[in-house]
Length: 308
Image (cartoon, rainbow, N blue to C red):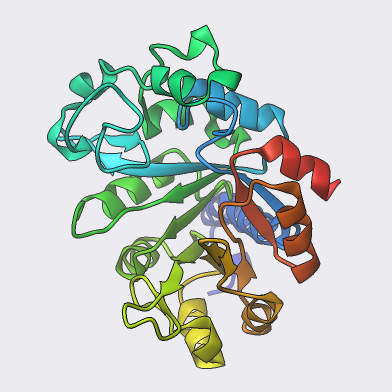
């Protein structure tokens, strides 16, 4: 049956349903188009200037021209998605133990800012003391789809419920449809779970290259790819089956683990390249010369200036 042969009500209903679907497709296409341009990814916010994953860090990142706010997610004992990098509390709060063993109320009672003043006295600010850990819901409530989010999931073995909870939250808030989110992970299993839940979400496979235990060459932390010297087009294509990009470390203990050829080969196989975590201007310029498509940085102000 053609649209013209339907009743006027049915035709109007069909057109009404088509409009939001078209708008969603346009928003997702625009996000993918924007990703072809260079992206400034604020690593845990402007975490070189303020305590990571706190309001001051996020606010400063946006003021400094970040294209994406990067968030690491863990789950509380009562199932809330919490923005914190480590699975334990000691480094960035005055708490102890694993995030997953504490309720949200217990996590909210912690001081997530004073550590920064102690670690970075040259950038200390009395206002950082007492900063709270934030939930994903709180971040979305503040910024909505005015901001783009680059979210890292952790191992599904640690949080088997995280992938579904995250996707359901993003869908409910309209952030997938508005082209507002990228999801990254070192865990291929985690990314493939997300892809199965919603194939519209752009995914980035993180990789970490370091010397092999036997001292012979390099190895990738979770075995996603072979060493860069041995990587093939098929290895990149295996990632491209579910992801739009790859996020590698560039150096290990001061020595390069990838080169411009790695970037070129990834591009040849349809993958964006977003290296992490790049904080020095000279290194930013070097990677721009390699043709990378974005960088994670603790100093989005520096990267924005270099890109300009």
